[in-house]
Image 1 (tube, rainbow, N blue to C red):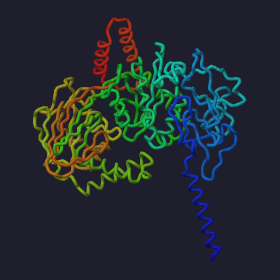
Image 2: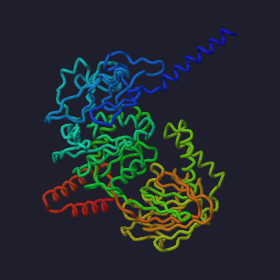
Image 3: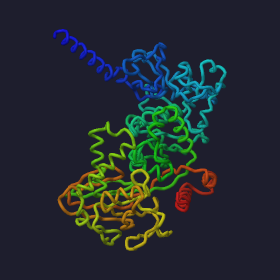
Image 4: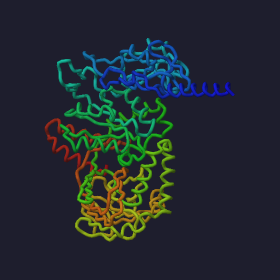
Length: 569
């Protein structure tokens, strides 16, 4: 009996020690800095090289690699060796050189990567001594490294990368922090703003991928570097690539258009990482990266490289934004909407989904699993019928005219032809086509939905089953109105659930809601081969005319807006 007790105690000690080792945070991770030229350490992962960059000894562990990895340059090491490794990927240097040299680092290399000299496989699975350039992500065997041309071409992105010589570090006497000097005219800089929590592990992998392709100063983590965006104010020809979901896009639009942003507003491209990604669908950036591909660092680097090139080739379009004002019990709260506003059953499903995701995050590991959970919650609403008499409490005024609302369980206000990750609820294909941008609140036929016409579409949903049928194409929403200004009055003391761009909110009834056009913002449309050449030449001519003084900047913007409207881009 005594021996068994001691055996149990010994087992508990071993398990406890293993738990502490797995969940402990090395001290070096507590002293991470956001300053350029310094490492940004994180726990070693499956995509970390299993060799220490300093002592060249393996990163051994019981259940995982026992070490840390730099997010910026990709090297791995023991946490007690980290302070001895001084050189990271340089974001700032004191002298300028016309030629760029490869910056070879011994990092984890995906198994499908090939040596840029001999073209044979050089992934870390086959050869732990291979190297990868921290600027162009090309790989090379150790035996081939002296045979490779030393100059780095940045893999075709040289004109979009800020040379480290233009990034100036502050002196001890200077109060300001970093600054970026005026760039040459041939440089069209790009800034990547990334939400590493989007798409689970995909966001972290994308962060490392972008670090490996551009100057680290051009990669902004929304959680710790967002204030650095101010460095790029007044920068000519700036373009921004947002790696995240619709929420990250809305946050940046708020910074550019609702805060004191100096200079011209840069157009925005989208690298979809979230679950909804409605804006990326509308602007031709796709629904997102598949989980399996997104977790592979090699595949992610290729996707990130393509996204940078696509952002530089894309052309600007407009997107309407709408102001929403909620008044409940003499308290007013304002919101800005880019995609859609839902009131009723669809908002209730979104609210239940959000609560479950926060309470049990382990259930939400893939997009397919998310859809299954969402469908289950929708099925529960078919049974519960919490919004059976919902529209009997609602009155809606559109552009000064009262709308008749039949018995519904939910209403939607749609700004773009994409809902819940790509579903066109309004359905442009069978509609009456009109070039007019007048209000259609009092007409039986409606114009095609357009993201930049200053009109907002109102649609009705009979129940959650009807919503599901609309999402899979078996049915269509009930079209109720199309106008520039709405006023909704909801009576009763019950809680009102609504969602704005997928984010759920709750308000105490009765509630008064006003919706009106706020402004237009610039979003980049990813070009396709079919129409890219003509559009590119047209935009080049417009830019040429502005540079030569034939037209001024205001006239240029007017022409671009009209080009965007007529092209329906």
